[in-house]
Image (cartoon, rainbow over all chains, first blue to last red; front, side, top):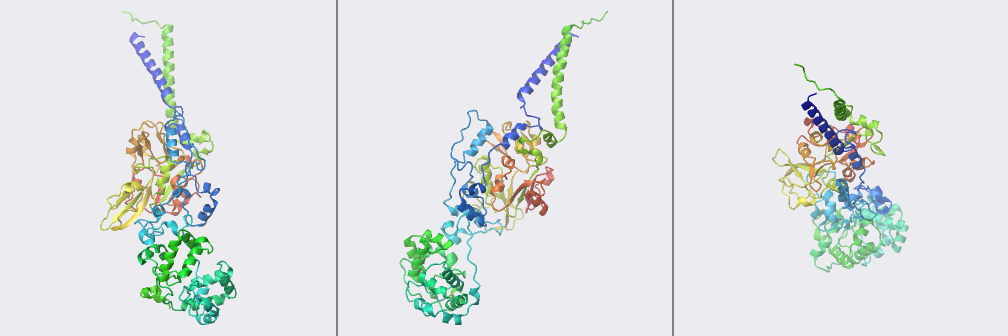
Length: 360
Length: 280
């Protein structure tokens, strides 16, 4: 074989050895195991730890909240509002190895966001409107609000429980549709001692009943009768009433004309009172005349009674999921101001309001 | 004249044998690689090798699919936040693995404007929407019609991004997920350019490409992707296409589903309901 051919063969052989060495050293071990990629990377990616833990993982420690949430329609994952659970509740820091590779650094970046402490949102207006602000493009089935009109500057949790935000009013009792005012007048005779013969109370401790919402009166009497609402005198009185009596009494009082309140007195300027009552108007109506039949009218109610009622909700002697939540956030001064505001509202001042006209 | 021939001595024979051995071995190696690529699908290879990629998860037993019900989406962007948290994606508005677009038809206009959390799309925004991940600061007075469309990687059966990768750093798994080997990626960004859906981005912090993995670390543990977990209205559906009872199989069976840009021949695995021809 000629010398130059031999040299060429040797050169090519050396190049071949070099290529083989380069391939062995540079191509990762698991390359081509399943295709034109590093098979080991799939295992690496699959082995990462999940950060979102799901609502179930919250249940064992936060069972009251979990139960309330599970029963509601508000099936928003806990971590949407409270942040990813990550390694909560274990607190500690992940120490990356000194020779952390790209993948390890990714993992650290991920865990860097999770400190073991969950977020408790304080600005619920900012939080809730993320889903519930009215925006063009949101499906009509999504409950949406124009924030200013809905609650002014109030926080959402003033009225809504964050875990079960839908406010559920009791259904309108059947008795509220069937009673007879004429028969009711007779049955209501014992009530007159405190609530006045024409439903206008003789003493400020007792509420006016004239023109009150019929369904609310039925509900209140039922609650007194079963003992769900406690007031010794009323429990005793209601115990002697049959279901028919309750329907009739409610029909009688609700049918009485709502008139000028007994106490017309404003403790502070009406403007600020109205602003502080903004949260009440959603249920109790703009002028204190409720648009919801199971929610009582407040306009012209006795100030003393309103103060006592709010105070009772606040300290828990009177129970209502919604009212207790609202009253809990009120100070004694707030209560006084609200009571005075509603006591000072008259039906006369809002004669044109349909709610007022509708009341006979 | 006699031809001079050098005698074939022992040294030459040994050299020849050495050369043949080296070339032969190299050739066999390469041929072996090509043979592996040529012989059957990834799935077929994988099933022969036992449980892969992890001891408790066999990728030949699943074929993942994703559904988007755009009629349900409320544009709250919980999915975007969840994805970023779960996957350590930069929190600035220009990096994301999934995103939500709002198609807005203004009065008197035929073409929609595409509004996103990062870019108000010429729809007057009252304040810094760029930082807030919200849609509720837009001036919606002239909007005639609008709807939200969540978007993410389509995990195409024929992915252009995988074709263009020069180093084999991105690939499609046997269970139908397009992944990036970020330790192997050289950061050339060909794949970012190649994706017809804009689903890939560049991770400047790591110098590598970045994309949705359908939370591969979650789905291989029996969990759902973080965005699906986080969605409060069920607009995102995920499951195994091979299981006729899975959420995604039922979603496809019950609804008339579409894919994005079918004309590209990419065969996406994300199925949409409630979009129109303007959504691409």
